[in-house]
Length: 638
Image (tube, rainbow, N blue to C red; front, top):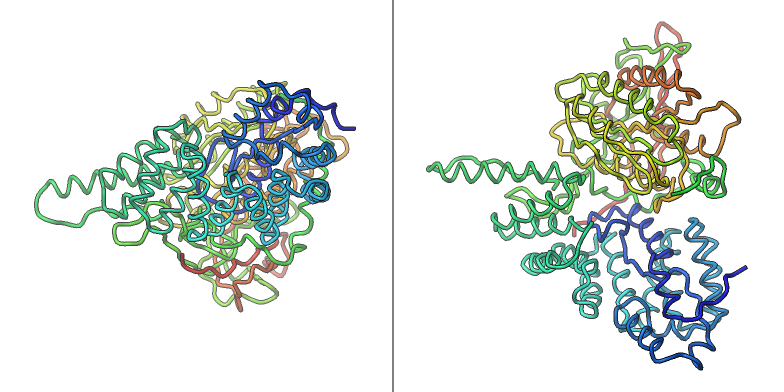
């Protein structure tokens, strides 16, 4: 049953400024599209700020006071709402509200039906057209999404939200030429909106309007742009193209100071060091070879809930989607990254001195980590002759490398659930995690970082090879709040993949959580896709205290691990938790690594199954590895 109407339409809309609809769905799109520009703490696309709109038609048209009219005009002038939406009849608004609730619960397919009925009742409902476009986008139907947003733009050409979302869709596809004019229209309507200007700076950089991009970023810096530090990263890229090295250093320093634990912060620091070295070389006198810059620049929870059940159901079978529409070049990858059928550098970031601002390199090479056991015991003495691989039912064209994981540097992320659902034994969990990290980082080149998550993800210790420093990061974790597990997984994977590497590394994410999620904007399916594309193996350790029937939350932890080649553990009590970390250390350290070129590879986005067989002394051994990957899609230069 819908809630009772508000007494004032303006107050109703103001009450909805938590952007329940588009904020959630836009973050979904951001996770899929991997747009490397943020527009605030919680958004990848436009924040439409509608939420619950209970508009009372009689009150609006007959009894509206002068103050209420002023409130409506203020909302229209601020770009929060279209003037047309204030005329929406109650029937249309009720359908819109139903869609809002469904989209908050990540049921965009069901929300589409209500939004269509809202538009049937009121064809000029701009908010419904925009939300319908975003719902289509969540269903990976880009043409329908674009059509709805274009309709919204034609209905009210003075409303910036339609143009902003059209621009962001184009940016998600690296179509900068299409994005720029849409974002310029949005900026002309809202010239001091930091979110719009951030996206515009990115689009201008992509169309090689470097000076304009730099000026746009400077304007953003004069505004409240909390959570939008990436605009300085884009500005540094533009400055590099202009060979304005002082501006490069300034923008990178802004970027690091505003967001020191950002995934790209290590790259920024490395570039700053290179700039400083080059200055020293030039100051020393005769020309010599300088250093080239790096190219890649609240809440009660339930283990069984409709939300978690729908998340698990949406994941489906690995190959059930047939073709992956988002398997283009992932921007966080680099030429030495572990990937799934695609290794590429496509960061719209700081280039080397001799290259254009975007670097795109496709190497169709699969890298795979796997463990081998015999009757539950790890087998650590295999060589390449003991291993057979079928990729898409064919042997590899060529095996490039085979080695134990111990031969590769480790990149470890420890993600600890700090929500209220794990409060009872939080101190013990931190001690067990500290011991694990101390044992896990043994190599001279190993690095790890620590993050805790509730509604938000907080990095308490950035990349470090010092177990003592990482232990301090674990100790800083504070308990309390809701649970946004899927958002945290996505952030951790991106951060692991963005770290600048000069050689192959093993990327591992360890999650200590009960598997419950009630706050994420990203879905379980999307977080798994991000892990797969960034080559991160996920290991989960459940904090659940009993060993009863399997819950939806348990299944969430299993899917995160199984789909990425890791393993899920369910200790069930405090004493067993410590033993699980010991087992986890052995599992991760005993993996094998293989890189190969698949036979008959086609960049079509199709799922390619992987089957690994291990045998020794005539005996078949048990292998744990991810089951396949989606081939990259063919890409074109910008």
